[in-house]
Image (cartoon, rainbow, N blue to C red):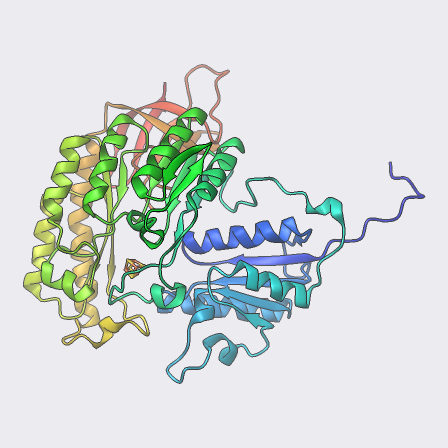
Length: 458
Ligand code: SF4
């Protein structure tokens, strides 16, 4: 019961949040939400319950730009007070004007990506922060948008490469690695808060520390280099203490990546390597200006599989890149047949505004791009079916993401959330044992298709 003589607690200013885009943008959203909560702002679940709305945008491909512009328009109509952040915020049109300000002049402020400080300044200006010491309390792991049992850990921002199809460096700048102690502390807080799977992300995970010349930092009183292999080793050890998984994304096939394969074989980090190769033909890779394009990828993949036979390799490819000949495309198909990549995404080339690849001679017509993408996916369907079929009869550890009356859905080490397949799990036979979200269970695999597995909990 409340004390009638105590002063009423002032209502907290409420901020609505719309988060669009990739996992890296999601981490930006989490950092902004963390800061808002740290400063005593509340979050609103609807436009009309919010005093102000922040829209975190994506500007990577034209469809994402349109989705972001629509989201801003909706927030303006429904609420009226809108701050925009994210990749689209940094984008200009052909006349050099800010796209957002031109289309939605009523937006209060616009920032680029990775701009927590600037967004907070804009929030302070348009929705001054409350002075209430007790509302500054915040869980140390921050505010997460992912379910409680998995989380993304961003280790760096920006990129030193200049792939000709990509405008991320022009929006996010050169590589800036986070201090290794900050990364480790965040990982520890996440594990303490119950995270069972940590997904390491960045634009180029294998380049971690290049910008600071692999500076030595300290964690738990011990020196540790700002270097991918040392970070993964330390994260793996930490994860072991909490019985959790560490998964690596966006790893380019530089020679030092070979050093983490034994860590995968040992079980320190998941034997899952997300290597965005984008193509196989050396001339196309040169036109793409891809990092590590001179590496002999087929040999690398074979060597990784020899070191760690259970490794799952995930990659993405672009079909119909400007100038791609039928022979170059068939070279890619031959590579895919030989490499038998476990998890594969393929996009038809999308001429993103501002990308230098758009100036390359002999662009591939849209229908050919689409047709080539379909051919890659058709081939991959067969490869994936065969590789998943080989898992039938095995018992695999599964992290449960969802439960329902029929059992649950989870993922093995081979499946990253959102982008890979799932395992449909029948619950254990004993009626007292129920599946729970965030729980690891051993599942006997009984069936497979080209994407997913089915099995029964043991
Ligand atoms: S490595 Fe290439 S594709 Fe990836 S962010 Fe950097 S420039 Fe873009």
